Length: 516
Figure 1 (tube, rainbow, N blue to C red):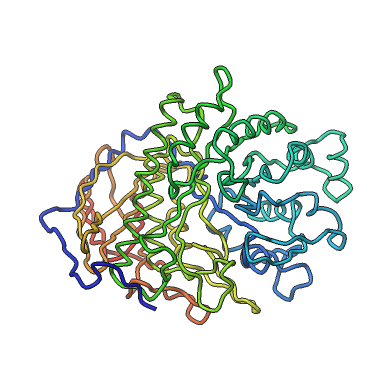
Figure 2: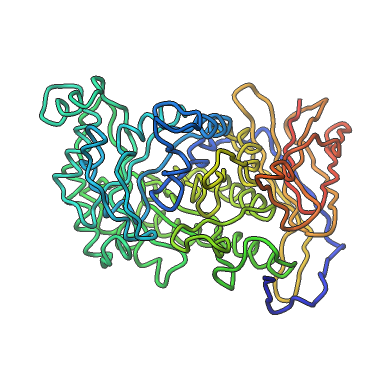
């Protein structure tokens, strides 16, 4: 099925009078690009948990205590910093005590949001935190405010994090875990304006304050509490942010550490196909992805007005592309393919997050495996897995984790199809802890290479090495039979002459450069 949009037959218009110029101010970096901007999200949705992460101890697929070894190995290579769980909409119908104790004694539940399937609760708190320990990442747990109780969420914190003697800590020990876990990040409900309870912002703000009061610090490290925020895709989203920032202040302090924001890239035609599209859909989706910057600025302006000192972080804990499900799959499982276009979507979004790293504390791609803009696809009924183009974008941007953002000035050429125009080039520059400077570049032009002239101010470099992610078609993607069609390769299109870096940037590509 081919996507048909207005302007499909119109030629691409390019504006060659605008050159691509970058000035990197290597001596002006102040802010750190937190690794947590590259976080992930794993919901009980479709085959993300069951069949993606969890196969069970008796599975012929190699696993450690039921968790797939190949999946863990692949995600560790990304340096995954945090993992959000158990939802999503699922979080506000999940009761954590159903997921502890002997697996044979755990009650089943119906996943009413996502396909109406019955789950056996074999993947619960212990299994999730085992996964996080195997990954070497921080857990981010989203608690049930919608259908749960204050007591239930308080006891979950106590069960997981308390080192002393108490009913919940003793129950944890009975279930095989003596030492408490370190769980810093807690979400208090999810999308409570919709699937999490259809609440008004004023009502949710009062509920949040009540829940927050009882989310006490049982461990040595203070909890980082994230309030449910708006979805930028919805109407009057700014009002939710306004009310939360106004009502969740207690005297001279805020009752929250982070305020969530969700944004999905649907494009102008929701549920368009993930592959088999033309140039119009390329422009439509990438221009929609770039709107993330506008949405962030709108909500951050409200937060800055109420909190000019920046005590409350923005937490974009759901973002990514959302297309039609693959033909023949359960529509409630949100299983979609992932193409080169999604890798560019991710890179453009990373650049936006990096520019706002002084105010964004965390972000989470939706989702990690087999759902929406996934990093990994696993074979249903088989043992194969494949890394997606988005996975490779995450891996290439790992160089920016906890690095110092280097301010840059970018002048980009533009290109357009019909009414939709795109900047040709997007970029991020950073300096890592060892002093190396990294530059990532994206060329959004679907059919034309771009020349980029980059002035290096406040630094000297004598060498450059790079990698390239591109493909021969707009919708190129990896399959179980052709798993390496889209993957990074060595890049030799960059050269240094004194303080000028010149890059020949191939069409539809992401490039990562290291300067030495």
